[in-house]
Length: 235
Image (cartoon, rainbow, N blue to C red):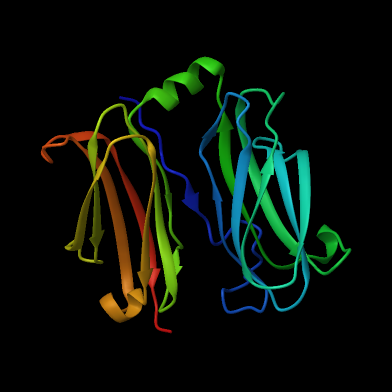
């Protein structure tokens, strides 16, 4: 079976300019699917911290040249999670990236504030896309790279052709499993697990989600394991 890597969150980038998460304006994460095809729209999710009203720019670029292909902007007045979608109809198969940055109102790149983030993705041919969506796999994991004592939601998207068990392991920095959940699933879809005050439950440190599809008997693994590293810190 081919390996398809789950979408990921990036909380720093090559053009962050040394800005830290403690800054007044900061893009905590960007979430972009690894693959799109079949003229499916591309959804870009971001988690923002802003000190005041900001304009957020989402730039679709060619991966090799950084040349702009499309751009969207949104005005936000408070910190939170936001998303935009790009129409992919007519975009040739290949590798691209989405870059995101913030500016004061009605300003441009030359006046950007905080950090910038970017994430790559690929547009697949029709044949590759049909093969991708027919393969049983964990297709996406949604979880912050930094977690404290607030409420977060673990999101998992998966594709299956027959009933399976969705197996979720939480590992500490030593690689020990400190929590395990197995959830029966009968069709492709999304799984959500709200978690409140993870810092109070496990303390500070580095942790890992390992998520895998299992056969109904719980013995045989189906496809590749999705591995997601993150940090828990004090409130």
